[in-house]
Image 1 (cartoon, rainbow, N blue to C red):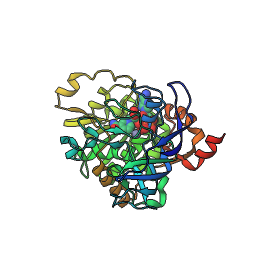
Image 2 (tube, helix red, strand yellow):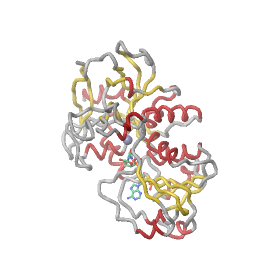
Image 3 (cartoon, helix red, strand yellow):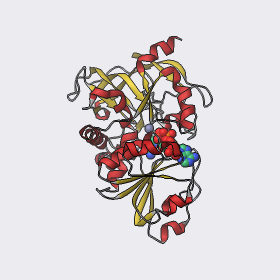
Image 4 (cartoon, helix red, strand yellow):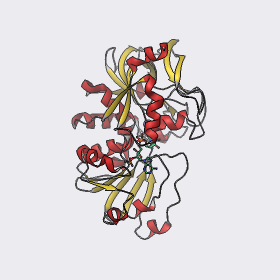
Length: 353
Ligand code: NAP
Ligand code: ZN
């Protein structure tokens, strides 16, 4: 077994604190990665605080992992010691159901195994990237080609793929009018990626202070969603809207901005439900409301390669491991510019303190 240092929540109200545990030995199909950086996703906070009512404790969050390969098993051909590598939200799936067969492991019919919090349909706990190393089956390890700024690549492993996948699935094309709701970790990646796909991007925010940043990140227009006049100017005009908001809110305000037959896809996963949308928002223009979960492994690799080609990384604020609880509080105030990334070199001193 491999002695591992991490940071864990022991119950929903406890701050995260040092925690030691064991990783499995490197098997024939495994890759062992020394973790250099780990992004901080709002899902980490939802999980650490049991907001989705499914948390296994101790909870070691973190599913935006980048680092260096330090060991590989006998069957591993695509990674060697010293390579940069990434791990996202999944570390296993059944590999035999139709979804896995189509490369959609996130929709595995038996439930994929999350990088933290174990299999989605119940089972043993797994420990994520707020730790110094991880051992993962080679099928769930990603190649990283833009390795000169590894810390800023980390958030692509969740925020990047969670926004890239629906933009591809709903076939966003150059020149289309695409809305992004919320400028946090997911939202800022959505703006960058949709703009790189050639879309005309309109960012919806509740934070007027983020206007300049949104334009710099690639939005063509910014709408403060609390301002009814600004919203009304965009009625019936969007080809697609990607909604990344982490809290319940009125979906009708955005559904009414879609063209006939257009879709709004939800990726935000609030603790409590949104108020039900008016059916009239949907039926009068045959609009659609949809959802999307992260992305498959092949598509995650495609997204990493797309981002490398277009020079896309995340805008990050680097934090030390011991700052994680304060970072969560700032995240709850929408005060993230635009992803916290933990410098894992700080873990040792955080654990000694
Ligand atoms: P984040 O960095 O905290 O960003 C969320 C943004 O939502 C905030 O920055 C804010 O943007 C907006 N917002 C927050 N509270 C709001 C409210 N009450 N009303 C309106 N807007 C509000 O979070 P994230 O890491 O991007 O994650 C976003 C959500 O996606 C979380 O629920 C997370 O669990 C979920 N998620 C889902 C998947 C998936 O596969 N579907 C994957 C990863 C994460 P403004 O300041 O611009 O308004
Ligand atoms: Zn995430």
